[in-house]
Length: 248
Image (tube, rainbow, N blue to C red; front, side):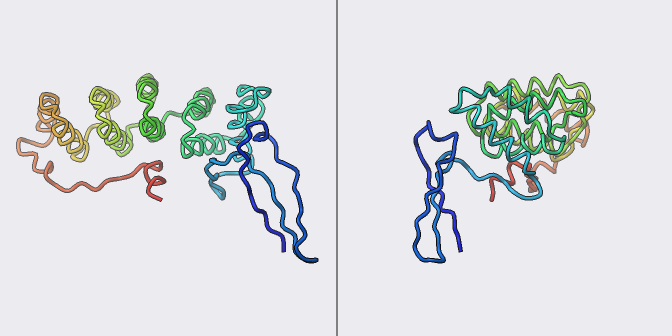
C-alpha cells in the first residue's frame, strides 16, 4: 500500500511548486513517497459538499497570488478563476477565506461578489465578515465594511443576524457602531424584539454607557411597557456560522 507523507518546506522559493516525489523502497510491495507542501502553516480546506473542486482550486490560487508569486497577479486570478465560478462556489470561496482568517483576500473577493448581477445583500454575511475582521483586530476594516452595509439599498430585516452583529460589536466595545447598528435596524423596519433590547440595554450598561442605555431603554418601554421584566431573563445565544465553526 502507498501512503503520502507531507513534509513542510519553509523555503519561499519552493512554496509555489511541489517538489518532485522521491521514492524510498522499503519492501518489494511497499513504497513511501515524500512530498513537500505549499505552506507549513496552512489550515486545511473544508472538503465535501460545501466546497467544490473548482472552489478549492480558486482558494489555493488566490492565496498563492497574494503571497509569494509576484508573476501571478491577484486580479488575474480573480478574472481567470473566480469570475467563472457559479454563485454557490463564489460564496463558498468567500466563506472559506473567512474561515482561514484570510481577511484581505476575503475583502477582495467580497468586492467582486458585490458586482455580480445575482448579488443580494444579507446582514448575516456582513455579520460574519465583521466578526472575522474584529477577531483579527482589523477595526478600521470593520468600520469600512459596516459603512458598506449601511449603503446597501435592499437589506432584508434579518433580526437574528442583526443580534449576532450586535453581540460582536459589543464584545469589542465598539459602542458607536453598536448604536449605528441599532439605528440601521430601525431604518430598514427591522423592529428590535425583546432579545434585541436585552442585548443592547444590558450590553451598554455593562460597558458603562448609561446615557445610551437609557435612550434604548426608553425605546423599549414604548414597545413593551415600563417594567421590561424580560431584561432579567436568560438569553439563548444564537451563533452565526462563523461563530459555530470556532466552537469546533
